[in-house]
Length: 171
Image 1 (cartoon, rainbow, N blue to C red):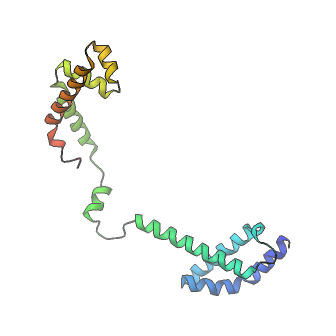
Image 2: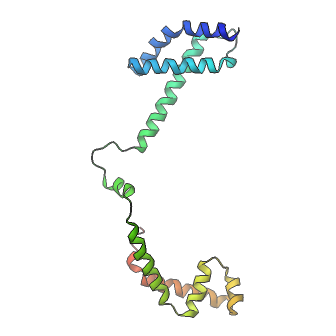
Image 3: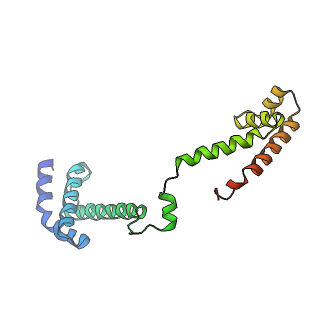
């Protein structure tokens, strides 16, 4: 069967496809859209149709699968969209943007906490924060690796104590 013959047969089944589509959609316009999508897919995938196969059944299967895929897409999209008049507290926290000026104050507090560290704790801590490994810091400062680990630990504890007011914001 050539493509022209196939297209002619497909068009002949369009009326029965419209009736079948109304069973799915319960709306005339949506049924017409579903028929159009089905016919487009049938013509597009003409090479997948095998002679001797029930054309009407093949078209109905395409329609059913198209409807199911569209339905799943709509359900998935609607699960991400809030349609309520009032946004719930949990969604408000997610959707609200933070004041960017707040970040400046946070950085000032971090810099203040760092400035309170003595050089013996500040240097190993900042080197570790920048990505240096313990042995690299040890070699650079010419101190034992255990001392490096201790100084970084003490610096962390001091920073946590100074920045304790931020502890509950992250949770």
